[in-house]
Image 1: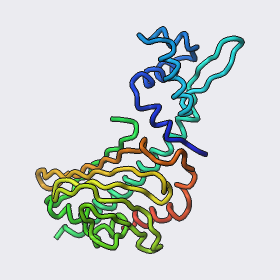
Image 2: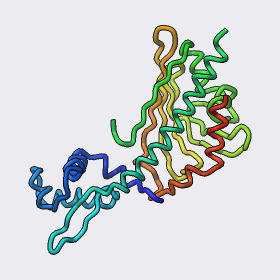
Image 3: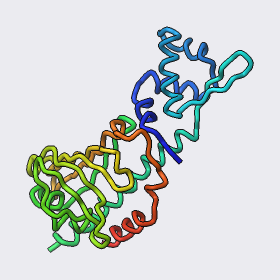
Length: 106
Length: 135
């Protein structure tokens, strides 16, 4: 399984975060997403391309429409990367606290 | 919080000067983290080795050291050798001890285009965790 640094870049922007929140509620066409922003269609499209590159949304054709939806697998991969360091630091800091308590208790 | 920042705190029942030793001295780091060959020094590269395996597990450069209050180093780990991140340690003396705040940032600046997550969960690395927990 692979994740990509573009995933993190995609997430680090308030507009893109808002798009993700919208798509978490329901699948949308670009036009429907644009209605929620004071921004040109081209501007929104650029953000959505970055989200797609970051594997956070997926796009499928439905007749002439292109439907955007949240890519849950992409989120899962990212969460695994974060979970790795979460566990790493929990283990290390637990070991540090135990060690200090042991060595400094006298 | 940005999606790429991780913050952890731990309370140590010692003053900041003693806590500082645990974050920077080779003999102390070897007991809870991994073992460097030398104490951490400002501006110097560092490498941390597995105490039993002898493998190089973490490495980077000490970017800033303010004795007893803060420490910053760049940080790479064996499972993701191309990914350079940054770790900040802040020490705050509070009643009865020192609060340590660890901030791990910069995953978005990673140099590699992609990395295999499965590598992070390889047996060697996992085994090492188990050893650390037993200290």
